[in-house]
Length: 155
Image 1 (cartoon, helix red, strand yellow):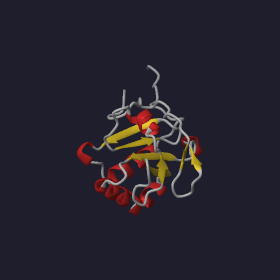
Image 2 (image 1 turned 90 degrees about the horizontal axis):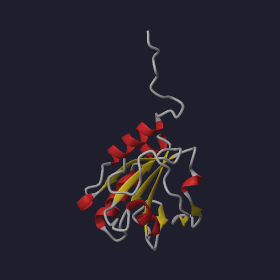
Image 3 (image 1 turned 180 degrees about the vertical axis):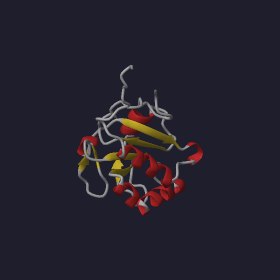
């Protein structure tokens, strides 16, 4: 099942990339957090007041994501608000995740194993609330890769 507004298949590994992170100038790849933290990627528009307000809201409540072991980044051509931004000047990461027509701001969540979990396209900049994103991050954090629905023996 494809996640809304993306090229990603639910539970499939997210595509890898290597880009600079705006606040440190270090290169970042999703493998940097794999196995340890969930990843929230907010594909936003630089210079957009709605996207900047969304970035400010997430940054102000970053503690909710930290407690859920989730790392949040904006992905854009230049920094967006106070969020650390993964710099994608040519739009290659956005095209890989959202498709060639991926102009809609979209938030993608991947679990700590690097599997695509959820996506929230923000048509007309109607992005999810921080509470919705944090709840999804918490839900991902509570999942156990070794657990499954038990199969009960026939009696």
